Length: 241
Figure 1 (cartoon, helix red, strand yellow):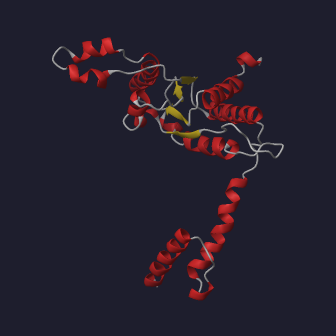
Figure 2: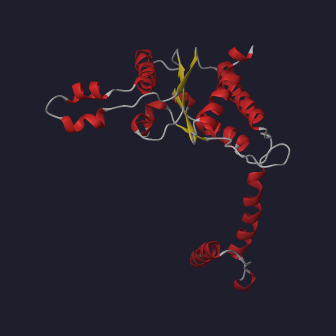
């Protein structure tokens, strides 16, 4: 597809735009489908393990942000957990809404309500509520509520629509995000296919594991905080014997 209609390119460049030019620290994935409950967790690994790096392909360090913190939850749960912050908090978080147009369950009469919630959230995040509108909602007897009823709006969201959820469309959705990550890696000039950041913790973990069960005189030297943690754990393990 031409770049202006290439969905991975569009999603990737939108992410770069908000990360590098708006300074957003994180972005949210909110699927309005319980069947996609684990998609945000998958995308956490995909996005942050692939592009959460500061070394460029040429070996130099970047002087610009790379991967944002990726997080999420099905929207029906998130509405009662963190959507308050998304609507009225001072931190702007770009959001990907994902809606499935036809239900994958027999409760067909519930599905319009689910879609309505998804579309209403994106509309509210975009339009917000002005102070004048908030005054009308508060009424003449509750002027102290006005500031609490104002929604700034202009919060960035993207809504992806899936006709029906099946193996083919789920694969397409995953491939979309995988290619999006590759687009961003190309822009940031980093390698999305290695995970050196996992290595150091594993190496040190083997040393700490040995120290947890070693004789007192054989415990390796550690910084004071780690040494204290090891000592407390050794004492607890000893008591449990």
